[in-house]
Every structure is written in structure tokens, then in C-alpha cells.
Amino acid sequence: MAPVSSSSGNMRNSRQSSFGLNKFSSSTVPSSVPTRDPRPLRDKQYQAMISQEIHEYLAANKFEIEMKQPLTPKTLKTPTQKEFVLMFQWLYKRLDPGYRFTKSIEHEVYFLLKTIKYPYLESINKSQISAVGGQNWPVFMGMLYWLVQLNQTLEIHENKQYEGVEETEDMVLDQIFTRYVCKSYGAFLANEDDYSEYKAEMQHEFEQHTASVYNEIQSLEEDNEHHRKQLQELSKDADHLTSLQKKGEALESDLVKFKAYIDSMEQRKVKWTSVLEKITDELAASEKELSALEQEKQSLQSQISSQGMTPADIDKMNSEREKLGKALESIASRLDEVSSTENDKELTAQKALESLEQHLQQYSSSLYRIGISSTASAQDFEINLDNPLSDANLGKRPDALLNGKDLKHTIRPALQNHRQEISMRVHKAQDEAIRLQELLDRLSETISEKKDQVETLEAKLNTDKITYDELYETMNSDASASNAEIERLERELHSMKVTSQQGLLQLNQRSQSVAIEHDQLEHSIQSSLDRLNADVEKTISTIINFKLHIQSTLENYENFILDECEREDKQLNDDLTI
View 1 (cartoon, rainbow, N blue to C red):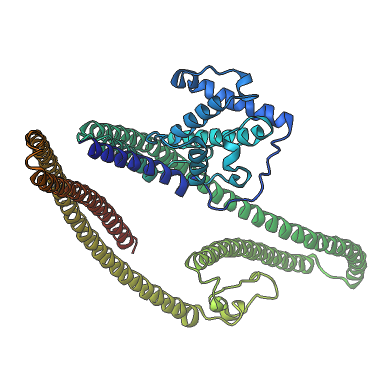
View 2 (cartoon, one colour; view 1 turned 30 degrees about the vertical axis):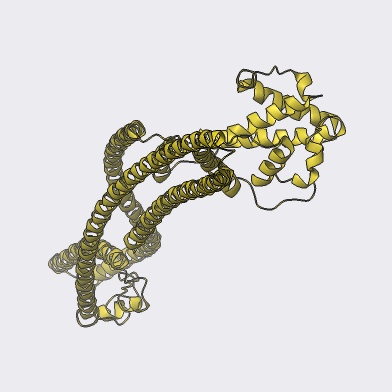
């Protein structure tokens, strides 16, 4: 029984140790090994600095209590071989708690440093490890400082104290599941079969994370609602601002028109000023003409008097003159009416021009909104109107005012053709939307099928787990049967030894008479013992090999299940990505 239990204990310890070593050698330490240590280990200030950090780390993590060894600053200046060994063992066991030191210290230290890929291993040889004091101590203190930094880095990793790294949803879920797997695997290495505590802890962490995610979603929904209300208020303000901008544009347009009207009035003022000057000149000329006429009248009266004309003739002439004056007044009044009518027509034409300009502005903005103004054929739709009320444009045809463009027979058909093109594009866009909706429906159906496949794989995984549990129970029962068989063989061996001893006593009593028979029996007993010992050793070896085979088979099967799960997850993610 002793050899078997020792072998199984060593095998279990080696499994725990290899777990720890693989964790650090494959992922934490770089594979390249520099030939020279670049650290200034011979510098006194650097030695004091790393000595202080090592002392603080050991004191903060209860080195004295766990190793039952006093720790002082002098310990790291001139340590004894025992103190170095205890510090190294304590620091390494924090990396690999399942490891047991069984060999000589120079072999253990060199092997473990090589295993965890200490980058400056070439500066240490095995002969120096047996005597670390004196001139060799800075090299070994640098090695202890590297172990302290490695432990601190792993503690930061395990406690998730990352700087500048934002955890994603997948990282949090992976960490929860990884903690459950690590704790369960540690319990498995400690020969514990009950993982319900770790599973319940994992479920509790998942529930807490789900609750935090739900609270975060509620908070985001509240923020979204608040932002939506702000957006509505801003939209209202934007509508009001748009209306104000339109009013401002209209006022600016009115201002431009008023300025144009004022300019036209100024031009008219200048024109009427010249007219008034002409009238004044004409009035002066008329006054001169009137004085000349008065003089002529006096001369005529004198001539009439001399000619002997009667007053009746003069009255007749005056009545004709009055008729002519009335006719002149009627002509003047009619001239005023024509001038008034002309002014009304001019105001009506100005209003019509303003209305026409507004319609042209709306037409231009409509062209810009529908995108015609940015096309190559934009000139075919543009309408330019250049001061149609000017003297140069009076009396021209509409097509002459529009640069030869016909609104009814040219621009309107072109607009109708463009409208048909827009309608065709709208129909094409609707057909494309229908096609995309059908594609979305097909993708939804594909996702549903993939979900069904995931559920099938989960059911298959549960079945494989049940099979694994059954195989594990079968292995335990086989091991128990093997132990019972070994005990039975040992009892038989013991009984055979007792029987041989009794036979030996009987043969001693009869040795003088049956010496030849005694030799034959002793040879027969010895050969039987050798054969039985060989059978026992063979049986033990077979049982150990069988146990190792079952154990390796279970580990391979577990790795195969994990690889299959990862492959299926990767394939599922690829399908979902597609």
C-alpha cells in the first residue's frame, strides 16, 4: 500500500505543479532570453531601492507569519543561505501553490528559474546557488526582485486593476466563467467532487451582472427619453427659427425692393426736376409772349379803333376766345386723367413684377430642393428676368424677355419629364427596399436556425458531461477494486510467508536426517516467492498504468470537448457575422 499511495501522491502534486508552471511559462514570460542583465545590480542606490521594495512586499504579505522567520532590513543586505531559501520558496509558492520542494536547493532554484523562463538565467550557475552571500548576492537579490515584480503583475491581473483599459461585456462574462473554471479545477486537483458552491457563486455573479446591465439599460432609456424631449424642444425652436429666417429673408427682399423703388423715385425726381425747369422756362417764355401779346393787343385795339370795329365784333371775338380757353382746359384735365391712369398702370405693373419675382424665387428654390440646379441640364430649367419694366424692354414679347425660352412648350414639358424620372426612381427605391426587407427576413430565418443549432449543441454538451461523470465514477470504482485486489494479494503473500516460516522450523528439526529434502524445499519456496513478488509487482505496475491511462484519457476527452465547444462557438460567430 505504501508505494502505491506515494506514487499517486507524487502524481497529483506533479499535476498541480505543471498547472502552475504552464500558466506562467506560456503566457506571462517572454520566450527570448537576453545574454546579459542590463540592470545596474552593482549600484548601491539601485540595491537599496530593490531591497526596500522586496522588504515591503514580504512584510505586506505576511512572510514572517507564513514562514516563521523574522524579517529585518539587514536580512536583505547580508542574508544567510536559509533566509534566501525561505524567501525564494515563499515567492515561488505564490506563483505555484501546488508545488513541493523535494530536491536540493541548487537544482530546485535553477530548474524552476529555467521553467518560468527567468530572462537573466545565464548570469547564475548552480555552484553559486549553494552560497548566495558575498559578491554573488546582488545577482540573487535581482532575481528575487524579478519574482516580486512577477507576483505583483499577476496580482494586478487577478484583481483586474488595469489602467486605461475599459472592460467590455464579453470580457466581464469571460472573467466570471474563468473564475468558476479555475476554482472548480483547483477543487478537482484537491480531490473534491462537489462544485456546487462555485456554480452557485458563478450564478450569483451572473445575476448581479444582469441586474447591473438592467439598471444601466433603464438609466440609458431615461437619458434617451430626456434627450428625446430636448430634441423635440429644439425641433420646435428650429421650426420657429426657420420661420424667423424666412421672415427675415422676406424683409430683406422687401428692403431691396423698397431701395429699388426709392432709386426709381429718385430717378423720377431728377426727371421731373428737368421737366419743371422746362415748364418754368416755358412759363417765362409765355409771360414774355403774353407781354408781347398785350402790346400787340394794344396795337390791335388802336388799329381797331382806327379801323372803326364795333363792340359786338369784339364780344364775338371774346366769346370765341373763351370757347378756345374751355377747350384748352378740357384738354388739360384729360391730360391729367391720362397721367393718373399711367401712374396706376405703372403701380399695377410694379406689383405684378414683384409677384412674378416671388414666384421665380419659389421656382428656383424648388429646383434646388429637387436637385435640378446641380445637374448638367440646369440651364434648360433656369428662368432669368432682367428688369422687364425698363424703357428698353417695353413692348417686347414674353419669350424675348425670357431669353428665348417658352414656358408652355419648353420648360413645362421638361419639368414633366423630370417628374416622370423622379417617379421612376421612387419606384426603383421602393423595389430595392422590398428586396432588402426580403433579405432581412431571410437573415432572420437563418439566425433562428443557428439558434436552434446552438440549443442542439448545448444539449449534446450536457449529454457529454453526463457521459464524463459516468466514466469518472467507473474509474473510481475500478480503482477501488484494484486496491482491494492488491490488499488480497498482500494477505496471501503474508500467509505464504507464515507458512514458509513454519515449514522452515519443521525442516530445521529434521535437518540432520533430511538435508537433501530441505534444500529442495527451500529452493522451491524461494522460487515461489520470486514468482509471487514478480506477479505482485507486475499487477501493481499494470494497475498504475491503467490508472494513468484512464486519467490521461479523461484529460484528452475534456480537452477535446473544450476544443469542440470553441470550434462550434467560433463557427457560430462566423455564421452570425456573415
